[in-house]
Image (tube, rainbow, N blue to C red; front, side, top):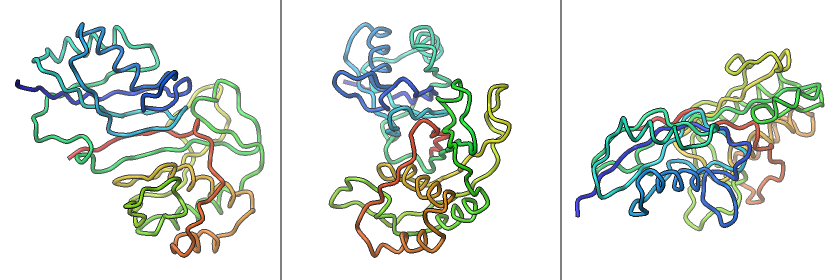
Amino acid sequence: MKKYYYLIHFQYLGFRYHGWLKQPGLKTIEFMMEKTTEFILGHTYFKILGASRTDAKVSANHSACELFVNEPLDIDKLLINFNNNLPNDIKVIKIEEKDRNFNIINSPRIKEYYYFFSSGEKCHPFCAPLICSFQEDLDILLMKKGALLFQGKHDFRQYCTKPGLKTNFRRELLVSRIEENNIFTANFFPARSYVYHIHSKGFMRYQVRLIMGQLLSLGKKEINLSDIKESLKGESCKPLRQIAPSSGLVLNKIKFD
């Protein structure tokens, strides 16, 4: 039987979801996409495979999944049907037809994440889904220096939880920098907030949040720049404990071949 392949680009606010991956008894993005697809098609003879497994409360400005079906679909009609039936915190932005040679797991070349945070005061509650507020006065200049240390190729074995036996800890960060936030703004946002940019071809479980956790420890003067340098040598197998909250993390973009 001939199969048809569709790449679905979508975005979501993850604050009320338990991440992408479907889990028993929990509301996840994959569950909502499958439930909506079943309603639209009127059957369960399809498969959905995601490009990225985000954690609970993590949002996405651009994510993607591949839909496998046994029938040709009208792309324009499918997009309208998705957005008419998905909840308001999930939106399909584009659908492309692919062939059997496309592989959503191997095709993504770069994943861009943002981590939004503020320092010195508690944010307005409306900020909670997008900005993680820290009431301590963080040393932002020191954190900027620390972020640059992660850029390039390093051994990230301390920046991963529950790795597999064949996990490759040698990874390259293409971008690692902290800037003042001018990406997301609102009248209830703090006067000054920041965003950590981190780009790579792929990330290990909790890697981004563990890196951000180290930068937060650095900003609080709990560690120094030398500690970060040591952690990237791969000489210790003990995973780091300081992990940043998930609600400030946004998958900004997935770039495909």
